Image (cartoon, rainbow, N blue to C red):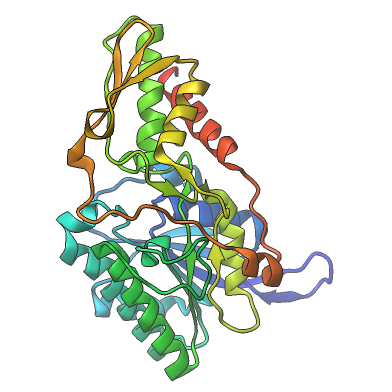
Length: 357
């Protein structure tokens, strides 16, 4: 059943099996698409039976014979054991997380359970029941936190500023411990901010692209103009297209020896730049009034379209993050394809198209 024909050489080889968690989210769904396009492997998308069903990102995979949804609870050791024993995966890619940084202050225990404890459950099951399986855990630039230099490379100290960042750091250490103690192929890459059309609406980039699209739609259709509320718009981040990172993750998993890499653009752009670029794409001329907590944007007709809202400030702010991906470029040949302006344009055009359907 797991044998497929190599058309070039005429012999059969084993179809490898890959488990991906977080499969209904941005990264997990893009990873499935990437693997279906670039490999012949069987992919199992893990979802929690009792979780809210939001399968919008994988609806297009409904009739895909090499993709199958399976039930698995990352915080249930028995569930994890049963799945690993049954499937015997060759790869395990963990994208499941409470990944909304601002929400980690509201739900710190849930964040720790999902982003740290769950990784331990996976590694222990892999160690016991599928020790040859190659494991990847999604890391984050938030691990670097209060940075001491820019850009940040693989040797930069971990200085998290949020419960989310701290949980990701804990996961990184347990991945290293299991790799070194049990000789597992276990890695955790640092993925700097990566966005796209499948990004959740709570995330600032999608909140902006969707918000500006709604403002444009309202202006064009003589409707009440919604006001976009954001927090610190001068925070600077390293933004890339999430789809560009999928081959980087796969490259990491297929190195001869397990090694962590930074993936990013090496560029910083502020939230303000992202907002202003979206407004430019929408053809909305604006004027800024006030400063700091009182800053607002108005249209040429004096209509309010944006304001800074202090309720969206974080208890501890990370002011800038910028990834040094030179090692990934040198050793793996990884290349980012979409620049900042291309990413913003892609996201805005997608959101305005959805509104105009």
